[in-house]
Image 1 (cartoon, rainbow, N blue to C red):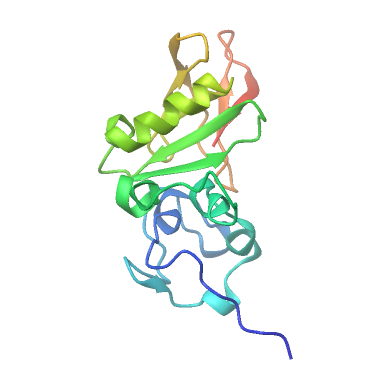
Image 2: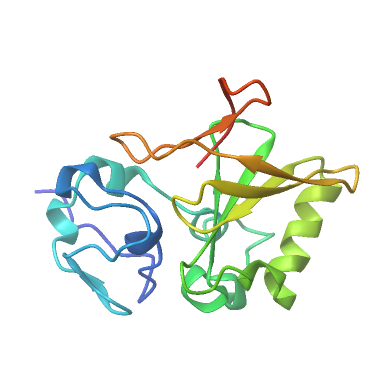
Length: 170
């Protein structure tokens, strides 16, 4: 008999809002119907594989011996979910829908600057937004147009010529 899943997220449920969950027809930016906000996932033991597999950077950092993100960077506290994107040089910073400027708070901005100094770009914006702000390691910033979310909730950056380039995804 295997041990039950342990919820290492505590009472953080931010990912239950910012990400799409196609298995439940839940769009990005809306609360999952199986979430008790600020408490838990009501179907934690049987949640979809995408939910089982997802780990935000705060959660990943908690398994490190050093460089753990502090409690002020837990997504429910700072209102930003930091996560890898499909581009290995870009970190996603999804803000809670009602807090689009949360990334400018003291703790999130300090972390963003650490990512930039380490050579990563950071794509910032609320879930399913058609525009994202991208901060580059060289200090530049640019606004990037994004596609509508696809059936899996993924969005892709749009090239200047209107084509999809996939350099930035959320």
